[in-house]
Structure formats: C-alpha cells, structure tokens
Image 1 (cartoon, rainbow, N blue to C red):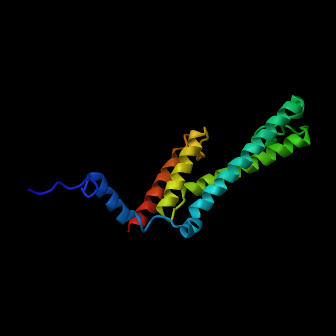
Image 2: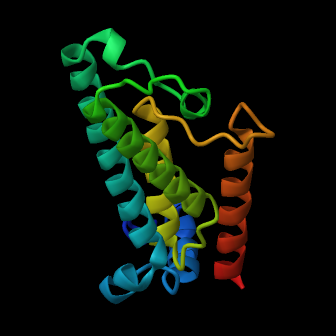
Length: 171
C-alpha cells in the first residue's frame, strides 16, 4: 500500500499554474533598476503632475469667477477672443484662462503619450493599467479626438499599444 502524498508535496492546479507563471514572468518582472529605466513610469508621473497642475488652474479660475464681476469676465472659450468677446475683461481673468488652457493642453499631451506608451516590463504594464483605471474611476475622461467625440480613439490606441508591448515581452 502506498502512502498518500502530504498536502505540501501534492501537485495542485494552483501550484502548477503558479510554477508556470513564475517561469514565464520572472524574466519580465521589473527589478528596481528596471523600474527606473522603464519610461512608462516617467510618463505616468508626468501625467499625474499635469493633472495636478490642471486641477490647480481650474481652482484658480473658479476662485476668480467668485471674485471678479461678471461684466469683467466675459471670455470663456478660445473662439471668444477671436470674436472680440472679453476685450474689457479683468487681466487676471484673461491670464487665468490662458494658464488654464495651457495646462489643459499639457495634460492632453501627456494623456496621448500614455495612449502610445510601450512599457518595458510587466510591472510597467500593470502600473499603466492601474493608472488608467484610477484616472477614470476618479471621474476624469481621456481626451477626445476631434473626429471621435466619445473619446473611443484614445482607448483603442491605448489597448493596441499595450497589447503590442505585452506581445513584445513574450517574444
């Protein structure tokens, strides 16, 4: 009669999967040196910083809106300047809107950089996915392309770029 295998030596499905994944993923996992060299971490940090600057610019505009009379803050959109709306606006209002537009453009540029990002390892890919999910969960939206008002183009490019990066890691 043979002895039953002890629970710790018994090969379970969970142990087999873990062993397989460890063998496949180990080379791709980021070491501390790879974490600093994977450009996706810098791209995520840049996007977070751009979002923080945009939040501050929007808060500044909101504060000014409460403190500057409406007749001295007529401009809101880029087209307003072209149409001559807001020519008598308070200079603080004009400067705040200009700064807000610049920070919005910077955040948009960083968001598109994330859409095209190519993580160098699984840790970078996971960080990129986590950041994208947290950004959306926070109520923010990805930039829209003028041809795609729903923002689907950003998401499509993001998914394709990430898939390509993951495929490259497997080869």
